[in-house]
Length: 322
Image (cartoon, rainbow, N blue to C red; front, side, top):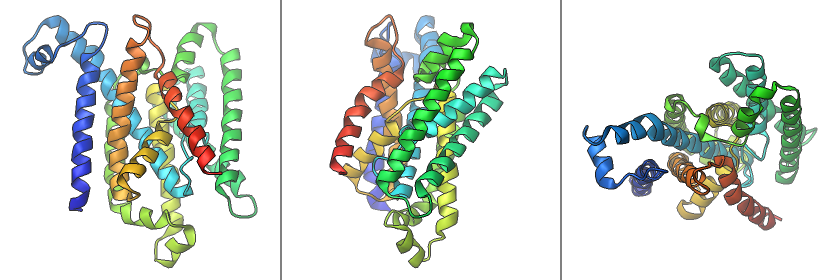
């Protein structure tokens, strides 16, 4: 376990640095000295308001959502033994968005919106795996194609819901669907779920390492494969649902982060899962900085930035996996 500590310490420092940078950069820049003054209880009232009431909640929410999506992507890639697996590509984010929008249009509270997102993500997971499995075993190509088709179906359903929904709600719903951190009111639920997920996955690291080698090998080595697979299904759906409820549909974080970490750190899930939480959070926090500043004073949905990063990498991975 000692060999796992140095990379996690380095990623923790990187995550803290990303959070500091994201809090400091904006339409009103805050210098390190001003930021330190605010953190020790001093500083100007404007800076305290700007940091504690506006930027810090948004940055922490972005960090939590990035970590949730990266961990969900890492779990899906272990389960499918496919580096192209991702909650967005496989339709989990689309299913969660449909569930959340249904609850919104029905006028339900945030708890029901979160519940609808979880049900939609779990249903999408079961649908993709059920259709890809068919009467035989699934293959990576079959699963990927099934996920893309299901995601397209969710996209069509979302478009229909937007077309028949109330006109006054349309702009906010569109920005939310594109992944917009401006609507993230509180980071605490997402941060709590992320922390619990990482802690719960830590004892399962060895079993996940064996599962990554194949279903039959895991069974031969005594791993309870079916309960572990169902646990991954439910966990990935829950993490995706919380991320979608917090910030809308943000793509490719779950694809980019686990893959890049495996290239650098290897494929030990005891290291990859906590590292994905840290690196995914840092990446989305920095991407949100670009979304806020690239065409300031206007703001881009952060999902646009992640798609610009993720699409080229997805095409590259798809080309390599031929």
